[in-house]
Amino acid sequence: MLSSFFSKSKPINFIIVALYMLTLYIIAYYKKGFHLEYGPVLIFIGGFIAYVIAMLLLNLITQKNDLTKKSTNTILLFAFFSALLPISLTSPDILLANLFLILGVICVLNLKEGKQIKSNVFDASLCIGLASLVYFWSIGFIIIVFLGVLFFEPKNYRNWIIPIIGLMTIYVLANCFTLVFYDSFFVITDYIAPVSFTFDNYLNRENLFPIGSIMLCIIFFFSVYLLKFKRKSAKLKPILKLIIAQLIIAILVIIVVPNKNTAEILFIATPLAIIGTTYLEMDHDRLIKEINIWVFLLLPFMMLLF
Image (cartoon, rainbow, N blue to C red; front, side, top):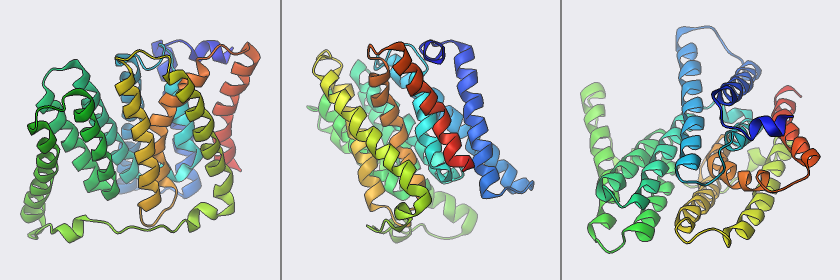
């Protein structure tokens, strides 16, 4: 039974999920059109590496912080949400930005240990700054760093300044790079992207079903998550609030980004996978669990092949 298989956390489970992701990744590129040339091949390989590392880091977040039981349900949901809109898989900038954001979230969650607070805040800010260089509106996730400071170490005023210093460090380093390699200055106007509230691509016929499926999952999974939230320990609640904040910020980023092509929905995949796992871990009838897993496995193929 698949539900029993994915309820375990063994090396073979991760290999199977990685192969599943690779299959979806290859189909997405095949559908887009792929040329066996040096540049595209490097981008193809680099994008998949970023995709798989993001999956492994997501599992690290859930297991290290006791957000879910030891299973591969979370990474399966991550693969599901990320592949529903295949343009996410063929957008290396989105995949790389998402990887940096996950690294930033890991640093923020490390604040709960009460050790190396300033270092973790600075590292988280650097990661989000790097993500914003790749995809500017990723900078909105800097809010998570400030929330982490608020939840875990709010009394030291230096902690509130460090995120700004981290972003400024990235800006200075970016200028050093452009001056050395391009003999030009990286002005702030080149860095800041505009805001757009146009959703034309979201209204295309081929995107309506996957976007509708994701919206239903957000509403349903989030409702279940809030019901379970009350039963969680006080020690765990700040971490759960950060995951909720990550989802809300991802939605806000999607709303404001220009040139929306649905690839930015990938930012939702990480927090929604964690939130959705709460539902999969509930005491359901075995048949219901089995149907859920089959839907999550097969629906992306339907989106990619039809």
